[in-house]
Image (tube, rainbow over all chains, first blue to last red; front, top):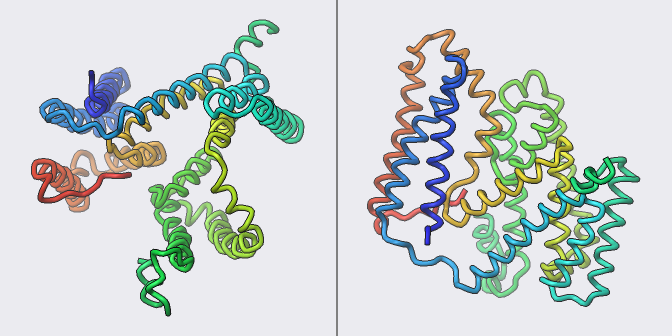
Length: 146
Length: 221
């Protein structure tokens, strides 16, 4: 399995390589700063990447249980973002609060519903009505209702 | 340092480490006091002196305020406002927290599972409201995951913030310097000193990584 430290070094190497590559599409004056930062960054991240590849695999910093918990939290994080993008803050926000409390927090269903209602009151009452900030309605509702 | 001084100046140093509240008050007072010092590099160099100042730099960007030496000439009113805000906020906080301390303390006993969904929803809402683009949420997901990977594997995250804040100033200044001095800008004494310092810090890192047992410094941002 790909080690995290190698992955991070690889991401940095790729980011600097992309920045340097893209800078050649700019006008000569505009590409100067990206190259001043990008070329040393590319060299250093290359050295770091090689160093990480040559080093022995590190001892796992987290226990398997912590690793699982980490994975679960990442899954929730991605679920929150995807649900908010698809269904918007007013509908997905309270639903996510309830779902998280019920499934992950192991709270009673009525506690989860009350927490969701509170979230809706804050989102709608404070942000939309009181502050007058239009909340994102979600791609699905945009598609359905224009 | 603040904790050490509190222990030394206390009449009951034997109580420290066993729940003596003065230990917390001393350390936290030092922590609050350093914010004023953090304000200087944040305002005049665009380099955040603490994590709180990094957030404030983000707010500056949202408001179109560019930190740097021009803060002293063009935005001196903002500088004074921030200085007085720090002073007044600290004084107000003392009275507020004395009054509300017992209730605020109960937040510490609150289950994390209650806070997580609210924090996630409102943090994502804040990111959406900055510009009103739903694509910001995707950006948060990508950059948040990257930031977490960085934290897990001891890569510093502060340079990213410094890059975002200082990028424009650096580009403008470099173009001006090149226009005035040409390529010789890189061989001027100050440039050479800075280049030497950068090379020395890289050299020190490589030396340290080759001899991890002899010199070991944690690399947290």
